[in-house]
Image (cartoon, rainbow, N blue to C red):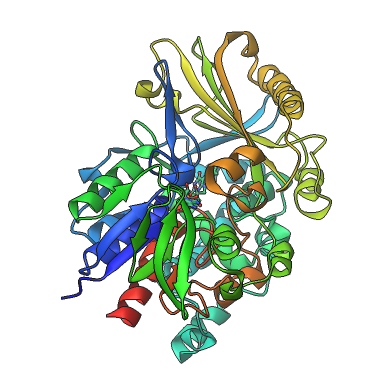
Length: 492
Ligand SMILES: Cc1cc2nc3c(=O)[nH]c(=O)nc-3n(C[C@H](O)[C@H](O)[C@H](O)COP(=O)(O)OP(=O)(O)OC[C@H]3O[C@@H](n4cnc5c(N)ncnc54)[C@H](O)[C@@H]3O)c2cc1C
């Protein structure tokens, strides 16, 4: 029986997942977390009866969460109650031009057919491929540590990969099936979660459409943070110790072996293994002696980061009309906004944005008769986000929100907090203030992602949204398991 001590840096999804998997494999595990509460980007805060999820709001791929808890003999329902949203979300193309996306597949097909005759049959063909990609992608490819090309060379996997459309863009793929601009935008939306536009995301990721259309959009009652709460309680049940307000300042390495971590307080904690779930760049460039870094600053500057975001958490003292739980404002063209994120980084002239109103589904997250709203504008990383500019964009999107939803909102805002690049850097040491890690472009996939193992330090590993398999809650959960398996394989 191993009594090795693993120190896990960070209590985000990846850190909690890695820690719990190690704990049930006889590791003594301590998580050290910089902030005073768990969850990283999925923290929550409360203000006078409003309960705000700070980051993720879309619960997709419920099977990944089931698998996570099942690994420990549990189920999500032991920790939180899930509700399937119907409509899944609304897409706002303009005033009086709103699509409610039905949860039911037949109703979804009927909706498409009305927009483009023949689209229902095309959807069947599109989804058949997407289902196959989901099975191979989520149940096989993402579970690979991606440390060697040989992980991908078994004849059966090579055959699978040929069917996965890795070398075709999502944008071209969608256009093979659909002609209507509206449907194309709808089908291209899910890959925005992967941090790039459909032109630069491999068509492998139509698996996201399968997740969206076939598996559905869910919501844990009382908010997304309930998942974190459940994971913390499970981790502690398995013996993981979590220390909050414990920022790591250095991983002390001697002769190519990580010996201990030093906290900001000066305290040192010795370790047999260190798993870093904090932002990869921060660990690689700021927590270890530069001679042990996996990658140069130049390497990092050449990475395509997924966007940062400007967020507003709003408490509203009345009930809102004409909005859904999830509302995607596609009332301006994506092209110029994408250009402002990826090609010529700048504040966009006419931003697309997303509005979430969880209190429409769940009355526990806002006081009686009030509404809890979260607004998000995706932005290029590393922009200057002064208070003035945040306010300017608040007014731009609030004008559109009020006009399109046909109601006064601004004058009913009784609580408002903004959050952007500076906050991502301060709170999470986020490289360039990124929100979602690295984009899943072809040249940043699998073995081409930052490696989950330090190449010069035998017992230092990385996990989380900047390494394999990529950004998002389900991949971060998987990342923690993948890294734990590597630790167990190499250190027992
Ligand atoms: C606004 C927003 C919306 C999102 N929406 C969705 C969504 O709807 N659905 C979805 O699936 N995904 C979504 N995501 C992405 C998802 O939240 C992330 O991919 C995921 O939470 C990343 O988890 P992680 O464990 O890799 O990193 P993190 O959550 O960032 O965890 C890293 C932890 O390390 C800690 N840390 C950093 N430095 C140190 C240090 N020196 N010492 C100690 N601790 C340290 C941090 O405090 C943090 O707790 C969203 C993200 C954001 C920001």
